[in-house]
Image 1 (tube, rainbow, N blue to C red):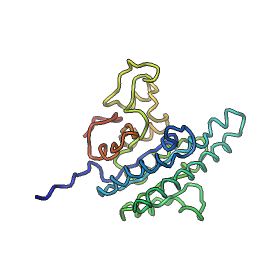
Image 2 (image 1 turned 60 degrees about the vertical axis):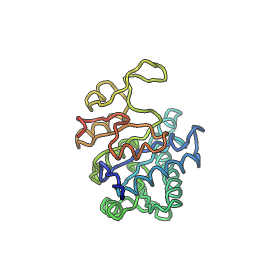
Image 3 (image 1 turned 180 degrees about the vertical axis):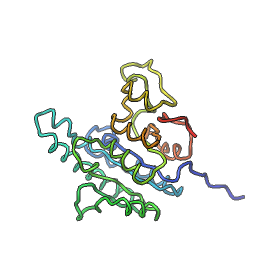
Length: 245
């Protein structure tokens, strides 16, 4: 008897990975075992036929805001942070290709020797051909976070949802590390996120998602298989936006 393959809920998504997630328990740098585990989760989703764009952060290597707080020129510090995301993107690309997943890295800062420049139409074409596209170097502009990049790329490639992969199992009304009694939201609107400063994404990113009606799902990526569960529509994490369809 043939088993029916599970039907994904989404056709095209943007997965937002922070640099800290790539660091694993080390807290800094790149942990190869963690990157391999993430690549296996991503490969599972790609095998479902879902078109995957990935935006990676660089906080495990360098944070522009931290450099600026130490007296460095903010634009220079942010440029260093954008370059850090390219290192993470290449590490993730290598892990995916070792699993046989066709992948392209596109950078907002041109560096043709290691990656393609970001071109919207080319990115969409890669997605349509079943390639995972990793967006690196942020938006190419200082003063904007990679969360904002995720919102921007999602709007540009017409993604149906942003999956924000974190080390927490959703969005809480207060930091659960310091407030164990804090309630986790199952759903929360963009206006509440902005008004209460819930930290889902920065205000620019959240506003961009609200304006373009792109929902965000915040979930725990450290539990193997969770990316696939979210894509299949299982109710894990926190849905940010309007009511889930």
